[in-house]
Length: 176
Image (cartoon, rainbow, N blue to C red; front, top):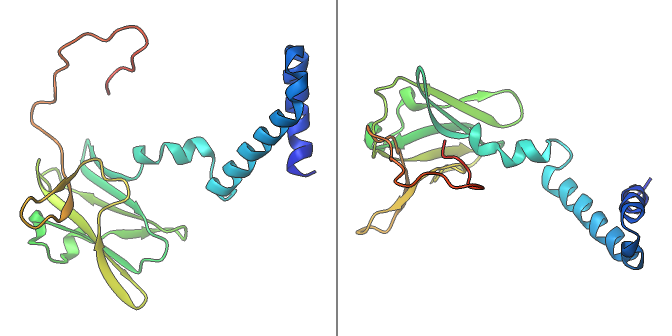
């Protein structure tokens, strides 16, 4: 069954629910086919679209009950180090990520005192034939040095979290 055949039952249900859509049947089929093709291209058939959209909840730097967890997806990497203020911008074995499985996921677990609020960091990634620095794909905060104009990720964990000044109104998403 091709994509057009897959979209016809969906369009038929829409038209049964609202007969005024009948003149737009072909346009609806084209739009649904486009959506399905885009979903297949984005997910490569390997991951659910909702899981992909929520990647920031898994990847990146997260404070945990036991300290810090950092995860990155780098399938072609042979080694990855977290480098920054805390390591003198050098590769330190204490900040080496460990490859998890064969899908290109890497992780690092650190003590609560390994990183502090405001620390700047980036990744030093090694691959066959070379190495280079990069900002993590799921960095939550990135700042630019005004002198060098270099961008780095930044640990953002203030001692006192931001206090909302206004109460949440109907329809707004609650802060986490």
